Image 1 (cartoon, rainbow, N blue to C red):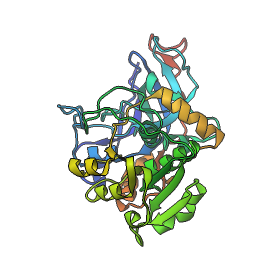
Image 2: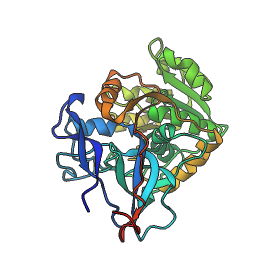
Image 3: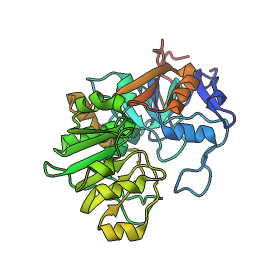
Length: 354
C-alpha cells in the first residue's frame, strides 16, 4: 500500500520565522499507547519559538532530543483517527485536546495528523470549538500546576526543592504580572475560581479584558510600578520573568510567595530577610489535569482568549505576530477539515481499506 502523505510545518534549519517550511511528509502511525489525531487546530507557544531559534535541549535534559528536520508544536485539538491496540478510553471519532510529550520538543503538532500519547489527551469540552481548545493545554496546565496541583513529582530544573502551590481562598490576594498573556489570563481565572482577590498587571489596552475575566484591580504597568502601589500580597504569579522580576518581592507580606513562570534572578539573602518564598515548576503533559480544566472550560467558569488565528501554512505569520508581543491570550494555527479519515488500528487496515 502506498505511503499516506500529509502536510506539516518543519524546520530544516534554525533562525527567524522565515525558516518555517510547509512540507509534504509521511503520515504518522500510532505506536504503543498512542492514537493518531486528525489535527483541527494547534496552539503556538514560546517553546515552539525557542526550538526555531536553535534550542534543542530542554532545561533539565543533558542531551539534545531533536534533530533537523523537525516538526514543532505541542498543543493540539482534533479528532482521533486511529488507535493503538493497547489504548483504552479513547476511540476513533473522539474529539480530544492535549499537550504532547512535554517537557520536550517531540510534540510534532504543526501538522495535519499527529501521533499522540493517549495519556497526554483529554476529551475536548463540548462547549468550545477546536480553536479555543488548542489554546488551552500548555498555558492552562502551566497555571494549573503552579496554582492548583502540581500533579507529578518530577524535579524542576530551576530549583532543588519541589514546588508547592499556595492555598487560595477568599482571604488570599494574588497579583498576576503579565495577566493578559497565555498563562496570565488562565492564572487570573483559576485564582478567581478559588475565591482569591486578584490584582492584574498588564498594559492599559487590556484593562477591560482582564476585568471581564474577574480581576478585582488592574494596574497599568506603563503608568505605575506595582511595587509602589501594592503591599501585603499573599502570592505573586510573574509570567514575564527576566531582569527586575525580584522587584515584586516588595509587594509580598511575610510568609508570602512569588512564583516565576519564567526564570528570574533572586537574591537568597533578600528573600530570607523578607521572609518570603520563591518557587517554580516545569509544566508537564497530563491528560487527567486537562480533563479537570476541561470541565471548567465546558461550564464557562474559565475561558480561552484567542489573540489571532492563522492557517497552518501561514505559521511564519503566526510567529511574526508572537514576536511583536503584547499578545492577548493565545495564537492558534488552524487546519482545514480532513475529507477522509484513517479509521485504522495498529493491527492493520479495516476490511476494504486499500
